[in-house]
Length: 142
Image 1 (cartoon, rainbow, N blue to C red):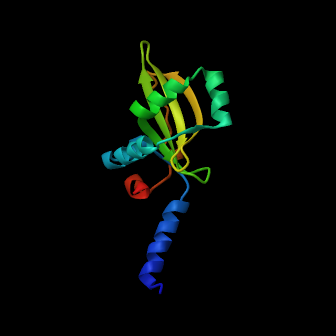
Image 2 (tube, rainbow, N blue to C red):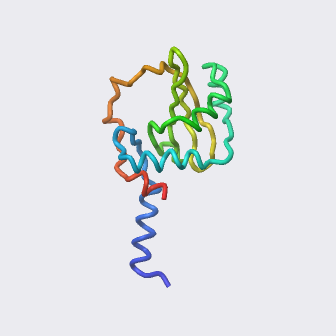
Image 3 (cartoon, rainbow, N blue to C red):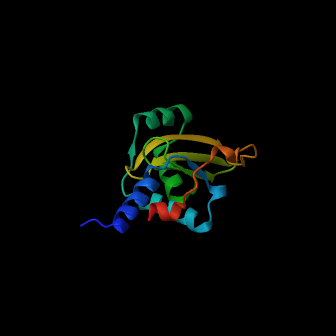
């Protein structure tokens, strides 16, 4: 038997998972950041998409750099603009610092794309108005 309370819980769950948008790490609290990077590190097996393989070749990103990014990097954003929750992870290393960025599907473990940028890039021109996701990331991933 389905009660009104059950319907409300199902609707809330459906609504949260169907939400689309982006949330930047500057908009997340510590609990949300920890939940997102924990989810990424729990992914046991990754698959490199054809697009990501092409980008690896174009940008000179190695499989080891992707592995290190996922293992040691931090979460930059979460988004659901392609019907899947995805995280952008960034890891800077070396001298001069180089940052490897990886977009990974949180449900599929698919490496969607990757690129490199300057490790010193602090995204001073970042427009946070483009980040409109209002849900709590920790609750979303629970």
